[in-house]
Amino acid sequence: MENILKALPHTFIPIFVAIDVFAILPIFISLTADMPKLRKQIIRDSIFTALIVGLSFVALGEAIFNILGITSDDFKIAGGLVLLILAISELIKHEEKSRKPAGRVGVVPIGVPLIVGPAVLTTILVLVDHYGIIPTIISFILNLFIIWISFNSAERITDILGKGTIGGISKIMALLLASIAVMMIRLGISNIIRDM
Image (tube, rainbow, N blue to C red):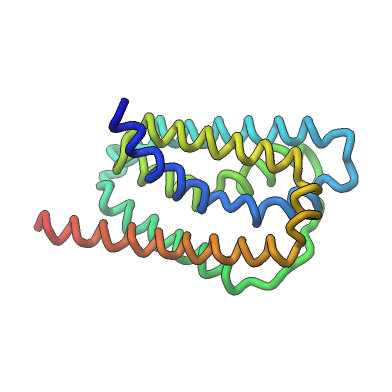
C-alpha cells in the first residue's frame, strides 16, 4: 500500500499533463453549445468511453508487447517520440474553429480521441511498465473524475479564467508533455545501452 501511495504522484501527473483538460474544455463547450439538454448525457458517454478504452489498454498492453515482440524500452522510445511530436504540434498550432461532428459526440470525438488519445494511451502503457497497474489505474480514474468535474463546470471555468489564460495553461501543459517525452526517450535509450 505504501509503495502504491509513493507511486501515485509519479503516475497521476503525467496522465494529467497528457489529458490536458485546459485544451479540451474550449472544444467541449464548442461541440456541445447547441445541445445544452444533452450535455449531461454527453459527459457520461465521454467519461465511460475514455474509461473503457484506457482500461482496455492497461489490460492488453503487455499481451500486445509479447505478440509483437516489443520490449518496454522499445515502447518508451517510440512512445516518447510520438508524445514529443504531439507536444510540439500543440505548442505551434494556431487556433482553429472546431467542426461540429454528427452522431454521439460524447463517444467520438470527446471520449476518444480528446480525453483518451495517443498521448494518454502511450503514457498509460509506459506508466504500467514503470510503476505498475494499480497506481496507474487509480491515477487514470482520478484524472477522469477531474475531467467530469471540469466538464460539468466548463462554462464557469472559462468565464473565471478567460480563454487567453486557458490557452496559456494549455501551452505550458504541452511543454511539460514534451519534457516527459524526452525523459521517456532518455530512459529507453539508457536501458537498451545498459543491457547490451
